[in-house]
Image (cartoon, rainbow, N blue to C red; front, side, top):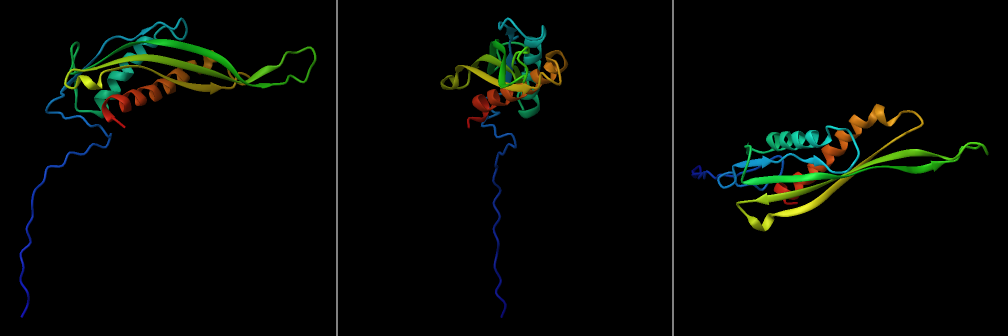
Length: 169
């Protein structure tokens, strides 16, 4: 005689995010970003505006938060505080009349970010995030690669800001 059984199914609500956020969208619904200013004394003239817009875009693409102009549940403000160009890996010129040159140059950008979480004030923080990119001055000038270098550096800094603020890794 065959065995007859019943299978019970239960519905469960599971929230999963491919971006790894720990946001409760029932509580945290909005974010705002004040204009970041370039206080570093260097870099492209539009660097502050570029960082501000890239930060907004990243959070809009990777969360369900609504961007509002002021007083979001999550607030971001700060400034670009560092823009340095420094030589890396010196290369000998092999000539007594020519000085040694840098084989690589490094562009480093630091951004001070203040994060305010109105729904959980324990997560508020003020921290400087920085990243660098190298380029070869023997084959290209800074003017040729600066825009691309800044974009790559900002991508990495914004990913770090995202992780530190809403991913809680």
